[in-house]
Image 1 (tube, rainbow, N blue to C red):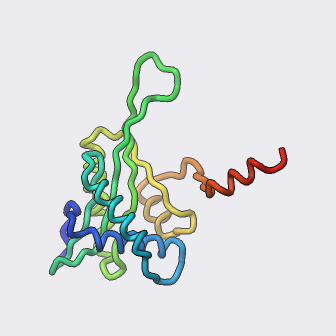
Image 2: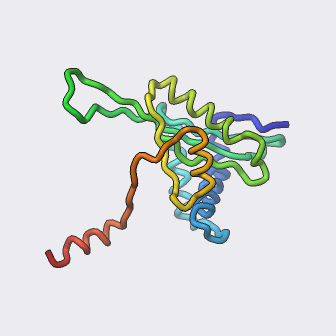
Image 3: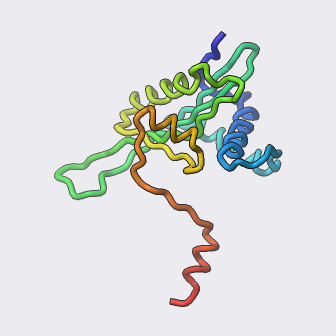
Length: 172
């Protein structure tokens, strides 16, 4: 029987944290490893806050016997238009984050099932656009998102704060 897509619950949190760790390891190509207790607690608290927000939805795919097969997360954001306009404009964007399907459950259509519910949630909250980010090294993600119609629109760069502070403190 195909897993059922449902809202995440408090008792799902340990598995959701494991999914996030699996996703991070998959993207980085690192070997399996155990999360530090402090990181596990940070992720658990972050997920709890997300589950309590009316503008967030975290889903799980639940297989027979209560086994969780995957997850998906979306946030709806509002922002004012940034260019001069004749009237106030509020843009609503939905940011898709952390979609994961366990390897043993891939090929069953769970990715699309999860995504359908996330996109419906965004549409119900008036989101005009969907935004996501994925690691440039994650070829599977690029293939999946491109097939659905997502297009690369920019580049996101990241740096450690300390490194930038050091660079700014250097010679002018």
